[in-house]
Length: 361
Length: 230
Image 1: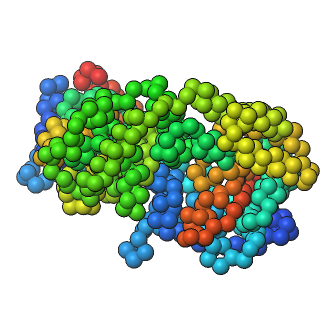
Image 2: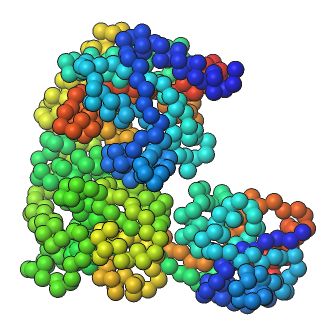
Image 3: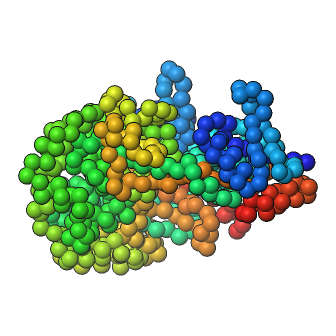
C-alpha cells in the first residue's frame, strides 16, 4: 500500500470509532471562502493557510481546518443535539519550518449540545483518549473560560477589560497591556503630549481617508478616560499571574483554583464548571489524577477556543506535533451563526502522527 | 566554467553597483544598444554579468541560476522564506538605503505608535464593519511584524505602486512601504509611526547557497572575493 493509502485506511478506522459513538459523517469542500476565515482569524491566517483565487469567486483558501465549515453546516441545517465526525486533509503553509507537514489528515469529532457542557467536554476528551489508548501519550488541559472570567472580573474600566480580552490569545501583547494598566510602564511621550493639549482636534491638518474626525475624537476621549483610571492593583495582577501559572494534575489544580477564587470571586462559576468537567471525566473512567492542567494552556492556539482546551502529546517526542487537540468554541458558533448560537466542543486526531508512533512502538 | 553575477538592469541601482565594483578593480558595463540587456565584465576572468530586474534577483539566487546577485535586503527578506538558508550576505554596498515603515494620515493625532494603531484598528472595525486596511507590497514582512507586535483587526491590501495615494483614494487607511527621505509621505499628508520601523534595507551583494559550482568556478568565486576584499 502507498503511504497515502495507509494514512487513509488508518483515518477511516479512527473515524469508524466516532461513527460507532453516534456521530454523523460530515463532508466539507476543500476550498473555503477566504473572507470568512480572514474575518475570524485575522490576517495571520494568511501565513498559515494557502490562499488561491479566481476571477469570479475571489479569494479561496485550502481548508486549514474542518471546524469552521462543520460549524457553518450545522448552523444552516443541523438538528440538535448533533455529533459529527470527518476525516480528510487540511493544508497549512510552513514557511518557517520545512520539517512540518503542509498537508496532513485530521479525523475529528464535534458535539453541538445545549444541555450538558461538562458531559460533552468529557465525552470528546474520553473518545479521543480511548482512540489513542495503546500509545504512550500524555494529556494536557486548560480552560480559556477561566482566563476570560478572571479578566472580566478585574477591578478596572470596561475599555481596559475589553482590550485585555481581545488580546488574551497574544500573550506578549496581553502582558504589555497589563503593565500599562497597572501603571508599571509610563504611557509613550507622544500620548502624554497629546493629552496635555487643550484642543488636539484643532491641529489644522487636512483630514484624508475613511477614518474621520469623530473617530479620532472618540479615541482621544477614550485615552483621556483611560489616563484618569486607577491602575490595576498589584494584588489583582498577582492573582492573575497565579492563575496563569497553575500547573498541576486536575484534582490539585482544582484545589489551587478554589483557593484563588476566594480572592478572585469572578472565577467562581468557571471553577465550578471545571469541577463538573472533572466529575464528568471521572464518571467516564478517565484517570483524572494523571491529566495535567496548565493555567495558560491554549493561549497561543487559534483564537476561537473559549472554554475547555486540551492536547495529547507523545511522551519523549518533542519533535512531533500534538497527536490530538481540541476544545470548546461556544463563541465561534455565535460569530458564524448570524444571530444563532449553540455550545460546541470538538477535537481532531492526526493519523500520520499516530502511525509514526505505532511504527516506533 | 563561469559564475553568474546578477545586477539590477537599470537606473541608479545599476549605476551605483557598477561604481562599487569599479572602485574595487572589476569593471562592469552594459554592451550593445541601451535597450539590449547584455553586459561585460573586465578585470577578472570567468564572471558573467546577468542584467535582471532587482525584484527577480532573489528568486534567481534561490533557484541557483545565478551565483551572486545585487539587490535590496527588503526584497530578499520579502520574497524568500528562511532567507538565511538560501543566500549569504557577502557585502553591504552602502547605497539604495530605504526603511520599511508604517505610515498613517497626519490628521490621526491620536495615533503615534503600533499600540495606537492596534487600538484604532479595533475601533475602526467596530465602526465600519471591516478590518482596517493597510496598503503594501511587502505582505510577508508586514504581516510578520504586526503579528510579532500583536496587532489585530487589520487587513493587508495589495498595492504595487503609488501606495501613498491609497488613503486619499479611500482604498486603505494606512500604508506600509519603503521610504528613504519621507518626502513622498509628507507630500501625501502621512506620518511614520514612531515605533513602526520594520526593516532597514540597502543594496547588498548576496551569494546563492544552492548554486552548483565546479572547482574552476569555485576558484573564480574565491578570486573575486579576494579582489573585492570581502
